[in-house]
Image (tube, rainbow, N blue to C red):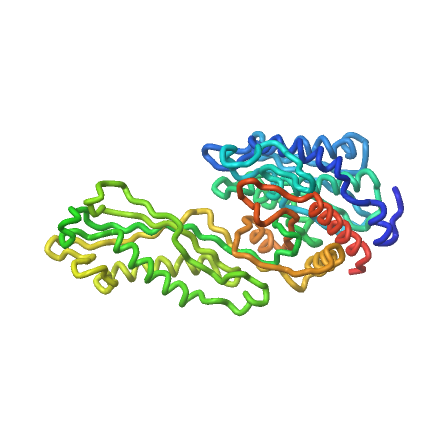
Length: 445
């Protein structure tokens, strides 16, 4: 194996990201994007279609074929939906570095809304275009190239370097398929011995905080009646609007901006807002019997998702018990019809898939080396936090992993139409990975 006694030497050995090799692999992977859209029950991804390209690239350099040092495992918990774990063994079993979170599923894309085919890679100078280029198939190809270079050049490392490519990141309604199952089975336990870099964000800077997410539905039940006789109705639309205003006011009193949000650089504090309205239908001259407002809570990681759910239920119970005190909408607006023994009523329900936010450990080795590598490659480092959610990583943190997050796609195209990444950004990502490995090789701790 080639000797590499200094960080400079390791960078020389691994070199830079090769455009031809990267684009060729990414083209194959993006060609599978149509088949890995994750939106059950209509679209169930078959991540093995992506995994086979990862395996085709790495197995020739593996111990299983005798062609190299990589230890490659394919682990599936559902047919066609595998995960891939790749290890480049180091000499010290107590030292390990992992790159995790590169997921092999994507969000949906409607080709009629795009300016180019989302399901095939198109190259426009530095732009690499297609669904998954930013989130997250571009990273799958990037980390595959890193592991391939390690397998080809065989540098002597003290640290074992591990890459984990996962299934089922884009949907939390189906469990037991991706990283959650790997953790449950103990297949990632040894990664606790070193920093774990979750590679699934964007814009090249360390993402040190993410938000929790609670999807809620507030249903208001009233009494259907002719709109010309509003005094004989209980208008659920008015009830929902007034009740939600009260719920929001109480939410912001109980979950105000937290002092740590400034430390982590969160763009916004915790928020609760409506995003959808629905009602059963009817004529314009009918006051409907019910309606539903749906929305979400985005919660900074310094508050508990469980506490918020409990509070929201308490708000609704209190409003129902005191509905006569709720604000009205005009001289005949009312939520109680005493003569008919009718009361308007609210119910709130929540999606089962609730995500907790993450505040990365700013005192850890992982954070230190990620910041230094980013500054070294980009010339500056500016960690940021958002109340967008990254499912799964809070669970890893709670299990004892030192989770740090970064990514090299374009935030503006994340889950968006006309998604693309820049090859130059991916090159810098490759250099950051090499710097991380180099620093941890030189680290005596």
